[in-house]
Length: 137
Image (cartoon, rainbow, N blue to C red; front, side):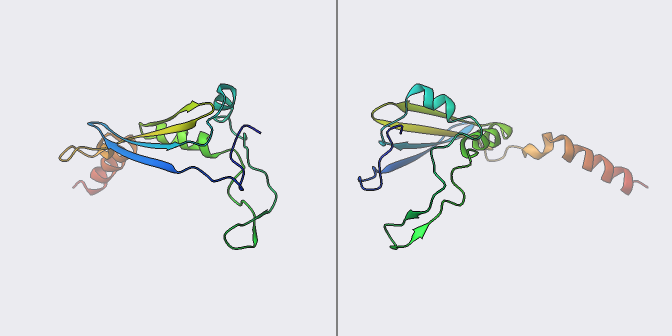
């Protein structure tokens, strides 16, 4: 394993901070779950990489079993980064092996009174041009 807490151990709290800057909203998610070695930090961004197993586990809360339906396919981090970058943001990780991990999600935001980014979207401009030519006398 890579040092993740087992279910019998007390899971450390996760802290979430939100900061609004001039251009970005930054969401910082921090834990003290043991961090990750540098090699694992690099591998975690690869499609298909996972630490989840696909076996059923006992649910300590309900007494039943559950299966991780959405976990373990290795798409979470790379797709999160792809979506953030597509919209002008980013995702990055700072891990301190033996201590914990901080994840940062940067998202663009519009200032009040600024024009919508849709005006800069080529598909919107194309649609507006088509609408004008259809409605022209």
